[in-house]
Image (spheres, rainbow over the protein chains, first blue to last red):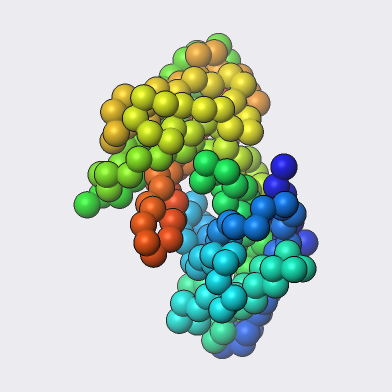
Length: 113
Length: 114
């Protein structure tokens, strides 16, 4: 079974600085999707960024980018120019068979003004 | 276009009571999912429906039943609620296409079982 591990329960960063959240996963599949979701206090799950495993180029969405290392099964999220609105729980997720998502435990990100 | 909607937003039950959580999506997606999120944890899949008329168990199906009423609606039923089912429940639907696939989540239902 696929597993997703986020080894950082909490992270903090100064406003306008850059922070990287770590995620590793375990799978025997060669084709899959990886995701980062943001969950603010409202509890809404918001998609931040998506990476297809067959793509070598790392995905980027404005201030958010990933470092996808397929051989190492690593999928980190970099947030540049951190803003107060980025404060939230961040979940890494792996797309399993039948499009089911397997989630990591989450990383709570605090932005210090 | 409301996306994925869930009702109710919050519910308190006594042990042994039953209830149904409702979910609807207006994006014409085929696949729908029910997850639960316990404190300090990520979401875990309860049941999913790959298409209208089909349902399958996920990681934590015990104590739950589901109905895919039509393409839009996917309900989750607790027949006899237990305190261990206190959680936040999320419904999601899956968008697929040439740009890739993405699950879209509802706002969640907070359930407290006393």
